[in-house]
Length: 249
Length: 245
Image 1 (cartoon, each protein chain N blue to C red):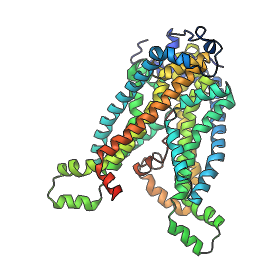
Image 2: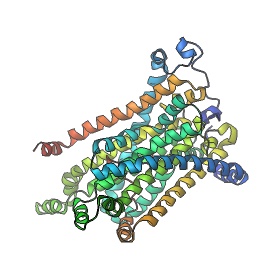
Image 3: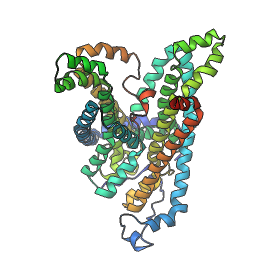
Image 4: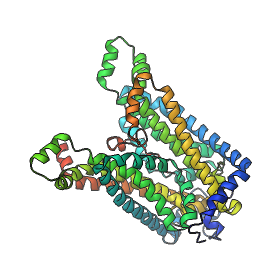
């Protein structure tokens, strides 16, 4: 197939999305459920752990190296491993996605809380705050932007990887993308467009939640950061090696 | 399980079961069969590994040259940062599998399709890091350079570029490791790289091949990362002496 510049395929693809909207909606829903379950579980595990370790300033070696290991793990290899160890199905794929989503959340939560300036914590203690109050009222709000960077990275990563999950029976839009024999190139391209839109929408949604959770005082700073189109998306070079970057799917 | 009928399968690609003959371990599809790996190393795994390295090197080399050019341009003309950044952020969010497929109508089921997507992802990581690196020279250092009578070009060559090496290498590490990961997915478009045996083996649920190729991909990423750390140390002797001091 030498389909150089078959631009009409994009038109056909959009037609496919419209014609097969029930199929697309159903697969999108599966995709969302799978990604959502994986993200929720990963957050429930990695966030408290990262925040707790960061609060104690302990375990930096582990927290940072989990991220480096996570980045070296190709998501296809992760999905394939889940397939071998756990077999075909929703939960085996979901577990693989959880494993892939934990590193960015854990490491960013750790780095964020660990990086809250010591004098700020000192000042809070001087004001008579308990450890718990320091964590909830000082460290967490200040750590929020970086924590969300991690969650955003994980969300993009999981939505992308859930596509590959189709090869291990995870369902979702990947079912269409990897089945060109069944749906034709227009179906594949149509589903690819849907996945891309879904990823951008998920990213925007997390950004929105972040904005809602950010305390008023920090928003001013956040706005200044947003001048940089990259802000909160990609690790800066100083942090680069301690964070996982999103696209590895 | 939905049959993963990938693009190359639709073309009548090879769907020859790899097991069914050979040792008991292979025919019973046990967890892992070292003898299969031994027998198929030169026929299946090694070529896939070499292809994988090629795919990665081409992508990172192109990505590096383009990112360096873009970063130097942005360093000189600041207003370019916003459009470059916005473009990069959008490309970065698109899942790799989707991006590969979206390029197929444009460039066909070719290596070009895969490389364009892979280069796209490296661009974002490298551009960002090289730019940060170029900006890492402190104002005092730049002032001193001007005081010594260095021209703009000399300052770039002798001060800013060397100081950009650590950030650049950090970016290269991420770019190489994530390209190795992404290149496994490329096997859905072209029958090349370590992803190809993984996808084939997933179709047949052949444990040994899935694990062997998957572990190879992970090892490749770890080895490449370690090599880049060594290269960074060799390129920045000053950081080492500072650490000793």
